[in-house]
Length: 137
Image 1 (cartoon, rainbow, N blue to C red):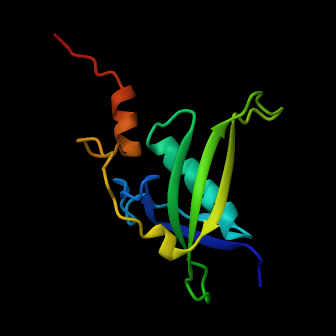
Image 2: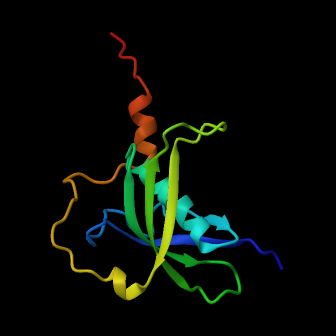
């Protein structure tokens, strides 16, 4: 049996405990790694890119194991992304850390929501905005 396991994002919360616009079913992705913390880092990177956040970013993530034959256990992490002083030789600009937290610690009360009024951008809308349509006269 392979040591690589598969994980998906269940929920994402802002630092103060308010839910994000992220819906677990749409675009949650499939992250493969040996440890759930590595998958949480990949999920964090994916969400920050999707939300077009540059620089520092921090979220609470709940990921679920989706490997066949597994118990589908859920893991909660406090994930942080910070900018490195110097990029690595491979071009990585960010340092990502994921600290495991308990589910009880995650259930904080939301005091203020940071949600913007518009819907979260999908990957497809980015492609449509780049195209230039030629109008014929």
